[in-house]
Length: 169
Length: 173
Image 1 (tube, each protein chain N blue to C red):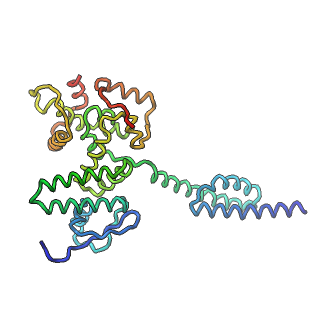
Image 2: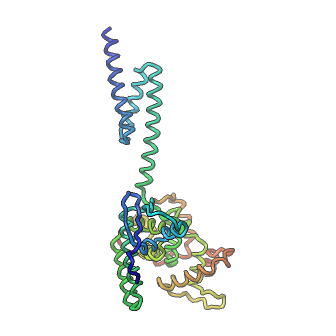
Image 3: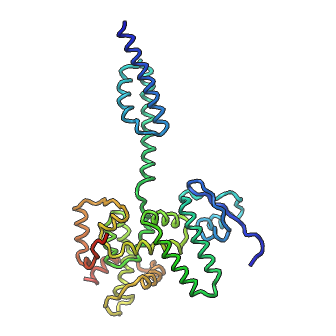
């Protein structure tokens, strides 16, 4: 463990909030890491993240900090893994669909693979065994098919349609 | 004479109102557009020709700016759509029925759900990797899908010429 003060990196969100984080945390953000890899002489100026809101970034930073600390523990990996799982489940639980999608867009832009995997699994779990109408309503997605077009596509899948849960909202 | 004074007075009042409207448009309060339309018509009738063309131009510019702003605002406010690569990633975590349902949600989701590799993955889950493996349907859980997804990621390049959805459908039916 180094005794020197860790280098800080400042990130600036779309809504103009600045977050000062340890270099190790910033390097969890693939997009930021790539920037520093390609610009080793970059100055200490804030890194603008035009596609990320401060709300999302604070969630993302918390996530990265927590998972970094878990990895640092290393030796008791089974309990760390369990804690990580609980944290991830809680993260999904505390986000409704709209904010989950917003967070995914930010995480995708920042290229944080593990976090994206977790969030995508969260969305997949919410879609599983649901009817088309339910998914549309749940995610506020507009149906851009005409009834005829939809019936046509549905007919193409006659061979597979069975055992879908009825709506439960 | 009285009539002339009244007309001039009226024109002046409209001019002031109209300028207010333009100012308001510039200040992003777009809801004045309908009122501005009405005033534009009045202004066209009341202003001298030269000034009229000036205010008409001003008004049109203000209106275009308003349209752009409201469009940007709509895009900002509308439901966020997930990009195709993220959708494909999510769909690779779904079982067959859920994948097909997701593919009916809207055009963008249909496109993602038709991704060839998703169907190669479904084929692998149902029928195994080898042609000699038994054709019994395997039980899918999140974990096994993830494992196969990794397998699939590693082997993408070799088998892109096959229409996996068709292949799956033939094998399934």
